[in-house]
Image 1 (tube, rainbow, N blue to C red):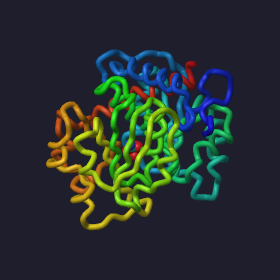
Image 2: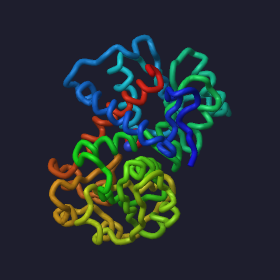
Image 3: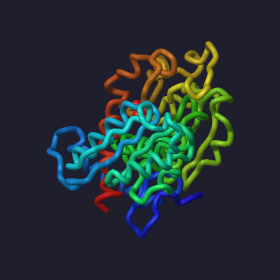
Length: 314
Ligand code: CP
C-alpha cells in the first residue's frame, strides 16, 4: 500500500488517491465535506477562505460533474479558477503533460486539478510542479474526490458504514470510481461485493482492501439485491474498450423489478454519466426514494470544497 497523498508535514499537500489515506484523514475530510453541504447546496452563503487563490482546472478528458463542481467549490470558498481545455492546448503540438503543468503553474495558479487518460498522470503532474495537485480521474487508476463524495452520500443515508453491505455493479474493470470507493469503503469497514460478468469484474479486485472491510466478487446480481444497503451502478465504459453482450441489461441492469426487491432504506447510486436503459432504468435513476444520484452531485461540490481547503487553506 502506498501513501501518495502527503508530501510534506502533516498538511495534505496533494490529493492523488484514497489508496493509503489513513482512516482519520478520510474521516476528517468527510466531516469537513459534511459541514460544507449547506454552502454547496446554496442554502448558506459562501465563505472567503480561498480569496485571492486560483485553482487551475486541467482537463484532458471530458467531464460535466467533476469539472463544474471543482469550479463551484473554488468559487463557494471565495477563490477563482483557470479553466484549461486539453483539447485546445499546445499538447497537440507535442508538449508533454509535465511541461504543460509546469507552464500552467508558472502563470501563478495556487493548485492544479487534473484529469487525464493515462493511469498515473496525476502523480506525474504532482512530480512536475511544486503547487498542490488534485486527481480528478487518471485513467483506470483512481478518482479520489468521487470516492469521497460517494462515501459522504452513503454516510448521510446510512450513518456508520462499518459492516454495511455495498454492491458495486457493472464495468468494474475500467472503473477508477470503483477503485477509489474500494479503498475508502474498506478503510471504514464496509463489505463490498463487486458484481458483473467475468470480463468486467476480475478476481484481482479482491486485493484492493485498505482496512477492516472486505471485497468479494460475484457474477450474480440477483443474489445480492435484497441484502445490499447500497447498489452502486457503474457505466459501461465503451470509450475504454469495454463491451457487453445483448443480455447485459437483463443480467446486470438496475431494473424496476430489482429495485423493488431492495430492502427499506437501501439506496441506488451512479457516479454518472448514465447509459439509461442499459445499466440502469430511467424509473430507478429518477426514483426520489431510492436514487441519490443528484445528491451525489451536490455532495461533489462539498467534497471538493473540503479537499481544496485541505490543500490550500490547511
Ligand atoms: N462522475 C464523473 O466523474 O462525472 P464526469 O465525467 O461528468 O466528471
